[in-house]
Image (cartoon, rainbow, N blue to C red; front, side, top):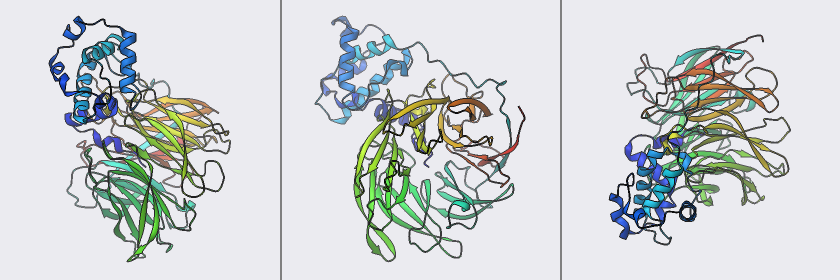
Length: 535
């Protein structure tokens, strides 16, 4: 997928407020009492009346902050925001807390909280340096630009949240390979096919806010169908407008659109499988939600009505912010498991191991040390070729804090094969939103391609020289070297690697998420893998 969806929280000052508050500090927001309203007007940048009448003790305040904030999530580290930024952040945290209605926690003094963070925060956060120009890759890529829009389509340039490549050689459902695009702003779902390096669009559907696609054959008729995760609303809201959409493939090449499940909160991913082993196709659904909504669901078939499967809902996880739920039999016991990445203040990667009856044992395999870590997605890949599946994980959502931070990275969460996991940093990229694996240089190991999304101008920071598309080459097993492919266009919510032209090497596809006013219109770029340059 699943490439996307924290991206739709990134639009204006209102979103800044609600995202920072919900992501950084639901704990802070859960304990403030209305009697403390007067403190909202205190100028904490100068001498606070609170601090004049108290013995400020960093150790004591640290313990109070950790107890208060840690009630819900990891305490935000002072290093996450520069010194001058903490005043407004703490104000927002307490404001949101007051609005939450909770009163079950002991509330630290606002002035002391601000002083604690300002004391320990850096004056500025170091901006990562671009990949050196002399770090030249051994691959040459030639870019061509394309559009997913039908002829005479007069809507603005789209915001493509997801590109997925479906290879006909790996499934009997497809006669030819295709690239499927989910465009959230116009609601278009568009098929694209290739003849050599010529791309053309085919079937399409008009939905609301499609964010991810999954190939399936839900009605078992041998014709390819797609399940589409539809957010229902581009803006962050607590609502029940999200849905699971079935694009039912027909022999004539068209789609019939059916809503399988509605009344969900902002759906970001759907995966299929017979999880309870009853012979029916079940669904794992990622409901990103917002503040009061959000879950991981298993939907089990309970029958059919007019040829449309009906489902019972089973809640597996009640946390909001889930982005991806790829499936895998991780322990090779014949039962289908899945992995999830949960963003917002949770910032974790979770393994759900199927007990064989559709119930799951949960195992945390990664937890960030900050609620503003900025998780953006996962993929499953065997990096070390040891026969078990690892996790490729990214964190680069800048719209939690609106700061570029040095820890935005692609990570390899290594499956050690004994039920334990180890995390390695593969490479850094400001605003990294998506990473995919593939052997780009045909040397027998897995490389990584990463794309960046920094679609909002940031005060005092120019992204013109930021890398926007990079190739992380695996030179030796477990050794990785980054190479820049593109700079200055940090508008990619999704990236795909595949052999689009069938010439035996992997190419790259990226898409524009923002209305960048490119003329002529350009929605998708194909980066043709032109040659391997001799060492």
